Length: 605
Image (tube, rainbow, N blue to C red; front, top):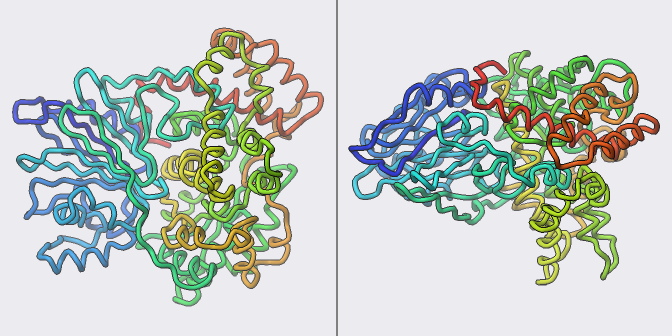
């Protein structure tokens, strides 16, 4: 697990200039928190390739960028884990390749030499890979990310000088000279309509992200050409519990300490139970589990459920209690690390939780992310399936994704901004169109929703947040539900079994406490409505961010109507109003933070 970076210029030839060392050092410094164990950058005429390493697999080997003596023209860097690396190494060794260590990424130059740009089709894992092919006649940069988009690559192509630059994190990418930092005009509407940027867009003009399962090809001076690959081939064996057990066991193996995140819900509970079972059967030390809560008495606490899962699984349980007075500081840090606005309050909890994981000596954490998207766990999915034919289920579905429903957004916007969004179209409009188009060609609603959730929302809204905020503390988050075998198994289930997570409830019947199986669904987050009530710790932070002077300067929302929304919430606290206010505040803070992204953030989290 690492952070990677690089540049590829139009004149990637002998006469081209090498990238400036000071510039590359600034780029690396902004994401060094994710790779504190080793740093290296290689440069040549018109190119640079670098890595900040978090040593997990073969900690004493695996120096990046990867080079093999018999393949001097191929360089590679990797962020992530390749779980089938032992199998690939045996195949490549049989073809005459030799490797200096057991690190998973060491085999990448040989894999590319054998299969060319199709190398990524052979990888089973979570990965963002950059291959620099400097062999005469085939000079190119090849970038690839895993099928689910667990590990991101952010890109900027300059159409004027033909250069392409990339990095694992947006703040690092912005440290390259020539990368623009202007926010997209529709960024506020996107945050309110979908909570974060979907598809290949980010909130910044000129900065894109590779979509899940994509490979990008960059020739000297040309713009990246992005192609989607077919899914990694996998043949799951057994029922849902068997398939998940196999993947949890694979991911629980590491050469560094491994723990599990236990929210108290079904998904993380299953991962916890199976990981603890594996530890007992292999005579490993007991599994450690982590749950985050907030000091004081707050509604919707899941701590009791998390404790019951831990007791049943016989883990060493850590209940991390965060001081609510720290939330203002946590907000600034999470916005800075994410590099673009994400309106889910869970971001603060995620950041604080992985901080505790690292402070307790763990480098790898197993999580339950991805289950709802694959097994139909969201309320909006059930509502859409129950909607009669002829009703606007897609519009209702899109509204359920929002931080502020369409009517409220349009009420808050200035007339100019409302007209701009009407002219350009909203992210919500594009989601509705995708869902309606899928149904129009005969795709059933659940398949259409699952495809949208896994292709766009899961990587942008959940996985990018987990990646950035775990790596903010140099923790590798591993996600069994996002592995190819589980994905293939889930998609092959009958509709009834993948609606309302029925298959997962059946899998957990013998593993989890009955109270956890019976409880209503609840996301892991912070009690936002209560924390924005009068006298609570977060209200003044939000009030300051939404001051009329700031909002008028932005020119996108009517300050008077935002103030009325804030007053209404203070008088009658509401989850929906709190979510809208939170999204507005996060976007406002992000616009301030992004202006300072030309200043090196340093190495500390």
